Image 1 (cartoon, rainbow, N blue to C red):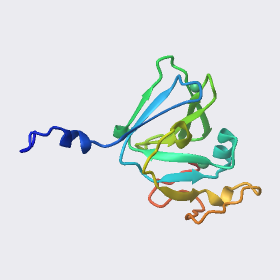
Image 2: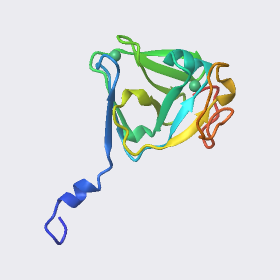
Image 3: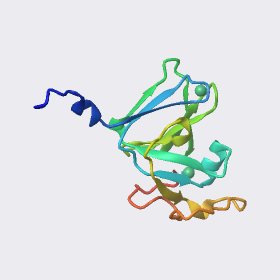
Image 4: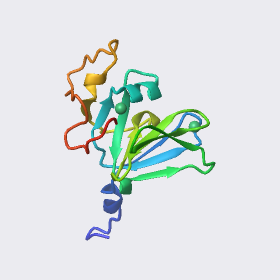
Length: 155
Ligand SMILES: [Zn+2]
Ligand SMILES: [Zn+2]
């Protein structure tokens, strides 16, 4: 409580929380802000898992992330060594990926209705984009991973 007897100050300064879920709703994720910039991955693996030219990825620190999966529906697939892609085995929605030995998760941004305040970091693995995938916005493009990201074959 501050000098004004106002306890709302504490509440107002709490980091925002963003809730998302898979298509069927069985798997729920929660991310505590502040949010890192979104990255758009154009690698062939993300393209296939998304069924779209690219996958929108939200990098999240371990301590800012929670996942609820009461029915134990989260499945795993390894398309490349050292990296696991997790998805809902009931509805097929991509949920996240993580790299072995690297802290943090890469949550699929499409799970969220609201990511208020998020910024757009750029396109990664732009060199792997499908020939029919035209990147037409002005965001930065990176041949592979975004600067500062631990090196790996895909995102
Ligand atoms: Zn689901
Ligand atoms: Zn990718």
